[in-house]
Length: 204
Image 1 (tube, rainbow, N blue to C red):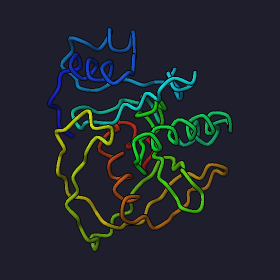
Image 2: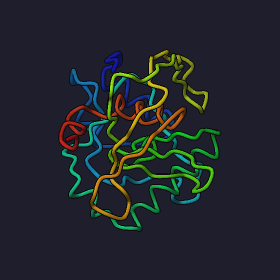
Image 3: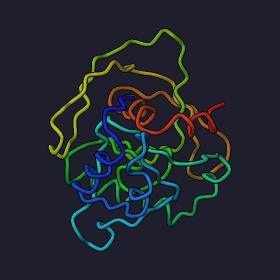
Image 4: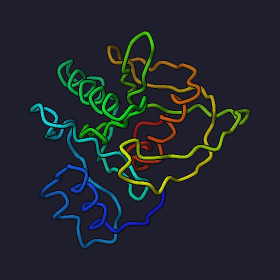
């Protein structure tokens, strides 16, 4: 994580891309922290009313604070919430030609990623946890805003393939699967973009 922006600038950036966190930013501005708080599973979103999707792609200068995360609460998400989350992700992915969307980028306060699957379409992966063996191959990846609004583009090292443990959409037992390429990069991006407090609470 790079704490390059004070909250006032991070909030200004979010407002500039069409996301209005209202009182959340009003409370946080003027503090030293560079966290944007999202203590709700689903926040209001302009795209819900048929307007242009509000895709607030992460720019690497702050982290999303999702509050207390737990497998218990996520395992009880309604089908309507999951459908809404996926619908938002599909709208942003289609508009900006990307196959990786982070939950908070579309107003979803969950530690989740949406990765494109050729067979299943946009796939919601909840609470992904990389299982690191130490034998993974690394790649140098440029993280860029697919909307083209932020041209800073940061270069980071990421694992090209890894085992990932995650919470299935319909069930309570964790599943493990091999993620590679863009899917693996998407999970690692989420781990950087969402605060450690959330991951610590749900990682085993």
